[in-house]
Image (cartoon, rainbow, N blue to C red):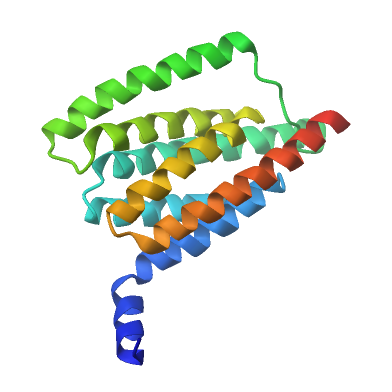
Length: 196
């Protein structure tokens, strides 16, 4: 591989690379349960909104808009918890809430899939399903439920294949790292829940 090839790749994929670095930092900070995760994640949401729109992964681009809203909500919710309790406390997920969220994720997959198909999006149903369940995981994360990490592991593993198929190699590599970070988050949040 020549220097010109590397330089060309970095020049043409700089935004995706910036999104990768920002996302890794934001998720790592989330595993640590620190409020600083939210502004970093917000920057990553905006960057990937642009990346996915350019790749015509329209459900993923739409997902980033929801991520911005969930990020702002999560930031506020965690900040309020820190102010009242002195730290970000992990909260158990009730079985009823789990069932409702999984059913909502399935319904969202169908609705978004139809919409994405009509917009001629790439991989409409797969992308829509991943988008829908990413929203569920984001909600759980904002609400401080450890179950978010289990769902992120599953969703991110499937995303790796989607991004390899769409030739988004840095993003596929990012999502492989996100699986590892989700496992770390799961471990740390379970410890925090056991300690409280």
